[in-house]
Image (tube, rainbow, N blue to C red; front, side, top):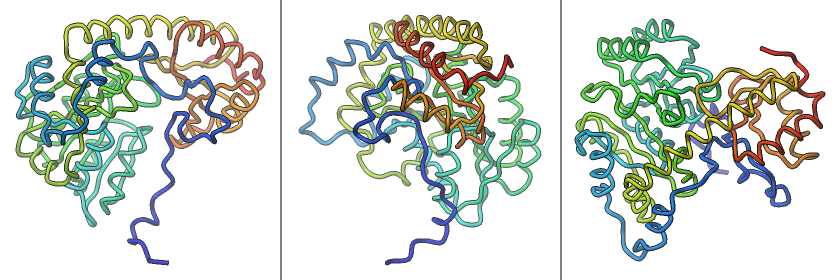
Length: 357
């Protein structure tokens, strides 16, 4: 067997939510493990994808999609880059700014691809659990810092003040700060993209997958200084954003698609609150969240996920990979589906009788 690069030994298997990783016989389940807009994409976006020219190569720089995003977010299109989902952009950032002998710092618990992308670039990774500690670590030869607001899996948002503190500290230590805003639209008071429109040391990531229900299409944007984006672009594979994705991206910034996303996300937030209240009435420990997904306490996350899947055909996110072996995460879906989740958790109550948090 050929011998892989030495840093590959540090990589754990990739763990994400969704039905795709399940055996074929188990895919017909209700999926609460992914944090998407359960009301689906706008008809305008569906129509744009149905009529796009898939027999042509895509624009390698996605100019039309970037212009649409820039008009919506009131920023310069030269400060935007389109990617095949936030994960693709994360890996490109790490290839451009990390290497063996360099270090990244991540605010945990967090999306596993931050650490995975850094390790694949050959860098070392240090995890911290609060902003103050992250600021202290920036002086220890750190090159890239990763944070998310709202965080996953907790759903809690960072304050603008905390983000400002980090941004200023990163500038002082010449560190690239990556702010992942995948779930910003689901919060009661979205910060918007970009939070810091003119910071050369900050890259904002904005997945469009979540609020527009486009998980299978892979649409995301990075906002950053053109000089920084040029380095990231040089580290990417060509034609990363497909014709289909670019057609969807242009359409999702239309007034009709934006209204659809805004209205359905508001509805989903209300649905998630009702789900939380119903779970609490059953005696389930549910953590507060600024989004439509919640952390739920349990005796053992892997056992709870397995029981719900085997006996109730309900899929939830085992949070062991986040370092939370006594929590699962659920994202609200449509009201009748949320009712099914409640029935399923009631049937498997022995896994969740942990009291209120």
